[in-house]
Image (cartoon, rainbow over all chains, first blue to last red; front, side, top):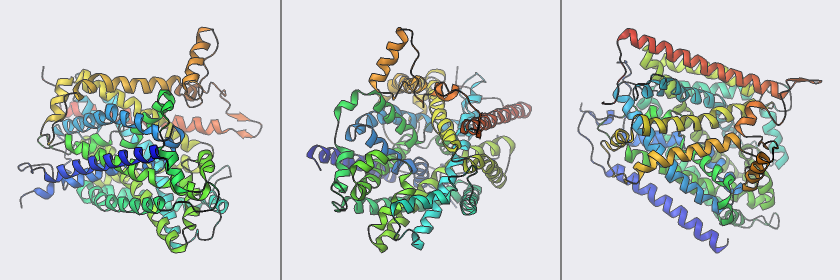
Length: 45
Length: 553
């Protein structure tokens, strides 16, 4: 692979992977909203 | 208020379902082919610019509109849009949000059935030892290609099984059906993608031909050719890919988001699902088909033949080169991945109809799903039986391409200019778990509508091959009184058949154009039937005293 192709591939793929991971982790770490919320698995029994 | 009480089970489930809606066959087939045909690595620049200026704003707009609709008990676009404005005509624009999905689902379910069959064939080892031409012929035989009436019992049964599976899952509702499938299918899809990407990246030079090297394929895919950035064709292709890949302009995002309560986040959810789709497309999608194909068939072959058909007519042959065990595993991973990508998308396409019938006519999930299945069955038949005549492509062009752009343009104008950008901005920020940069407010109001308008007009009037020189020549023709050189795939030419004339019958009987035009009338008929259904629902609402909500004066 040429250097320019390798650099572009690595920069783009790493950036996209990091942003995807960042947003997904942010979702997992966000505090749950008080009931009643949109998600039935959080419902109080 | 409707009796539609469906809900999502968990936030992660919603995001995986939304990402599954976006991740489709196009992530693995359309994206790399578009990149190859439009400047290799430079394609990623207009692609990312389109993502930021059009894709991300549309995601926020659609999530915001959907959640707004859900607040008033609406789960499909006709009455979601109706509640955003005093003008009652907007609900008929909302018909696109059901029509597009039904049109796409009709042919998409058929492709999905191919992936299911091919996954089973791969496991059975049916492709082991086959040559390239034999693999191609196997596919053509499978769909009954080469005769006036494309029918084989095995393909038809596979289609019925796939459609029934979709109907069954849809009848189980959001958390009990779609979400369960997404939670299972999305991680597995990513796992299969990673497996194939590793195989492709580590393949290297195979020695089959002089330029048979997977790294050469990656080089071709990623080497920046910056001169292509001034080519309008490349920009149109990149923006078009963003539409396809994010599933914006369809009505599915609105439907899924309408089950989110007002106080819950949509801004971060939209980013998480949108970037997950980007990961599957940019990281995994670019690392499978093209590198493996170049590894065994060479760069020249890929340049000449890269296209959707490679999925079924080439990949099984390429996997066979890995050796029998890896061939079976790779075939299962590839077609399994495509099946999961397909089914999570087709399920999303079914939900606007389900939401509409449950909201407006108090239908049960079972009844809504079964009627959807019956309609899709009859809509799909022409695409199956007259595949060779071009009916399949005709459905794809109008429902899977043009309708998306029209609806996206309409909704972003409604959101920014009719509903009002201030109301809209407040809506997408309500309950947000992230701070949306203020720069997106003017982008949503001015840049995104303009961006989509340019795409629409360029597609409407596209000359020649859409290159800069074609546009210059077209305008030169115009000023010198000569005819506009319509591209075959320009919307104007598609409507009026300007380049070919309308010929329905010749010495050999009915022409392909006859079948294509008849399928077009069928689609128009479906659209009009949905308009009548929306009108009926509107009258019912009036009788029931359901008055449209409006924004505050």
